[in-house]
Amino acid sequence: NQLCWFVSAVTGAGIDQIRAWMLELENDGELLAQLTKRFSSNPRRGISSTEPRWGRRLGWYALVRATQPDHVVETGTALGLGSCIIAAALLRNGHGRLATIDIDPEAGYLIAEPWSTVIDRCTGSSVEVLAEMRAVDMFLHDSLHTYDYEVSELTAVEPNLRSDAIILSDNSHETAALSDWAERTGHHYLFFKELPRDHWWPGDGIGVAWARPVPR
Image 1 (cartoon, rainbow, N blue to C red):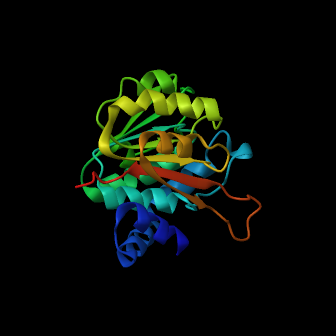
Image 2: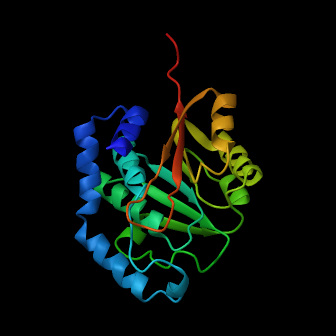
């Protein structure tokens, strides 16, 4: 419920609609089955989860559904769980693509059809690739969670953000990079802390920055 209010504060969407979008993801049996199958055959399964857990990523999904972006950019593909969730929202929207960036050429093991049809996988330094991205509607930092590196990514992508872009930072409890950037650039900023139930992981958090309306 708190995550719904978080998304509502950022997008202006109604709570009932946000709940419906989150339920849409939770009830996506095709996505759950495909991800569970690929988790079980993952060569790195000994050091990763054995099944998908949506957690705070329900918020990512609802934000994509609410804002209807044409171009989402994510850094830190890893296995590709977040990529698939974002792609599922884009497919539901009926438009838009995700560019996901990772320095590891083997990243993105979970990505498969039909979600792969709206995903462009980019290999290389996120800072260098971000400098080439154009007209970004939504940016998600989920790579190296240090203050300096996150600032480097924000600096690289900033000239290419649309005026109404949504900027997300996963694990924003670890650095103040996005909140500092929001203050410097005149954006709104909010943070949501994930608190998993009955799980050993302490939870991460979502930081989000979005444009203030131009005063009339």
